[in-house]
Length: 134
Image 1 (cartoon, one colour):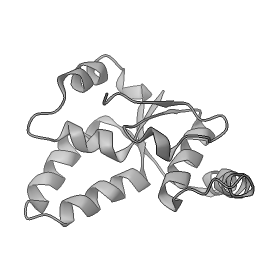
Image 2: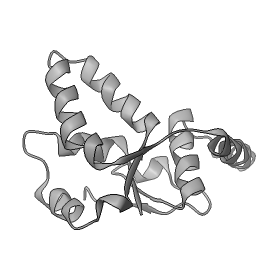
Image 3: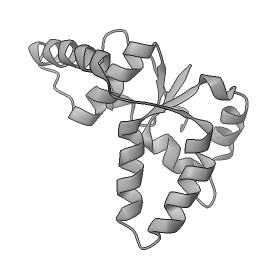
């Protein structure tokens, strides 16, 4: 089961998305594809910063969100987040708040994060990360 990070989702709606990414996504059943409300918020924010806001939002909702289960940051995610953030800080490995929330949701649900930003999620105990953008 896979959790798609913002950079992967944004590549899908590009004018020419990476062929290997699209082929790989097409081989994975929809029930195994997830993202988070945090990732969706990042995509909406990015779209709203452009002159093509409505076009990008429509493409994102039709081509990406309609094919993924969007997981919320809920109470159990908050518990995982708190333990994770404290543990990483003790080890001198701080991370950005959004990335830690995404990681907490992935850990909570036993998902592999698919991202081109592997370093954002490195050194997080128990978290599986794959880069499909290489």
